[in-house]
Length: 220
Ligand SMILES: N[C@@H](CCC(=O)N[C@@H](CS)C(=O)NCC(=O)O)C(=O)O
Image (cartoon, rainbow, N blue to C red; front, side, top):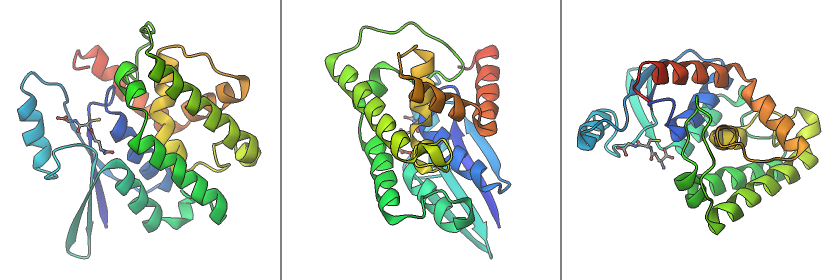
């Protein structure tokens, strides 16, 4: 069995970071292909990605097993597949009620917060001045902070992550942790501790090192 994860430029590709963290949490070895985003010829990037997935977007996970190759695309579908194939990693909470909440967190992130994503683009290795935030962006930040505080108060004591043990909910929000750091968003003490815990993950540090390298090489 082998895994290949196709990701975008690490400094920018927030969707790619999510399954990367999930895969790292399983401890499984995997190969990585990094595709440069935002090249001058946009269609060239899309064409390169389409060699891996017709959707033309990263991330993509290629699974080779027993003579069969399966392509999985879209961050949440990849995270779900990884969680299903490696239950020992505990990427969803065991308790059904906590699991239902964690799934709601992941889905809300996957389909929501468009203004936050638009105004506070991920720039993993940099700190940047905060732009003037639209009302919708402010509301989306407030929604995230209050969701995190509620989850941490309920489950955080059993491992320090949103649902105690590190889960896909944390994977889905890790790019937001990065954005809040990049733009210096003010957070409460429990959220600050949570963000420090996410940053301390070896996989986050590895992603940061690679992002910094992209910045140093002038490709991000
Ligand atoms: N819903 C998709 C979104 C994927 C996405 O938008 N990926 C961006 C990079 S972060 C991309 O592939 N951009 C390439 C392009 O637009 O040409 C997911 O969750 O994976």
